Length: 367
Image (cartoon, rainbow, N blue to C red; front, side, top):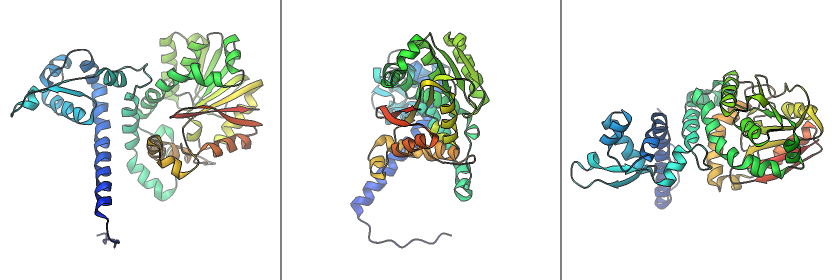
């Protein structure tokens, strides 16, 4: 048995505050996987398409079991993810309660083209938590957990999580913030998307710049296969080629090379950057889109985004960055100073933050 640890006198007010925070964290921890169930079963979409319904009416609409739906609706209403409208009182109140989605809830949970779409977070964060047993072991061994060893939900969930930000910012803000890149893409340029995953970023660029051609590369074969399917469905397969290779295996010359939310996951990010530098055409540029990070602990823990990112880094990003040799182990909170230093180490003459928002920093690297 573990012996109790002797502590100094406890401030009860502070203890109450701590326990309240743990309760709020526990509420969030149970909410996300239950929201994922609703996403998978189309429950949010069913609620968004009509008037307030009871669990029984939602069961008729979806073919699901009423008793489970009653509990799910209660949990989602308690979390603020579903809006409770009315239900009366007495012993049958929960059975007769009615629920709907507000316009904001419907947009966030059912509209994949909305900047506020968060269903991908349900999927990716729940997938990340599935690695806890393996993560406990690598704390002892120092080994990594490669990207391909994550749960299958991680791959699709990551694409769904990041795509809304790319739709909102990529062609309208991020690329225009770079020196001369947008003009070249409009005229027609050769572009590489390193670590492209399911190809969301590649497809968005191909749609925005039809005179350019694109190569998406990723070492995860199932993701590359899915990217090809997505490009064909979007009608841009004629100007995109997807290759199942590593980040350091670029072939040919490119006017523009992009890394979207992936450099920090790579065990050897410097080799990937050196390969990009070697593959750049004259006057070419490299863009790094990275999760927002800070150089100090104080800055990180003062931001809600920092809290989410630091936890996600430990579940996914850091283990991936330690799953090879050399193992830089950046994690998603490497901080801008270290990212800029890595660019110089790789041989770029200049590196700067070209744009940023609450969730991302966009770096421009110049040969």
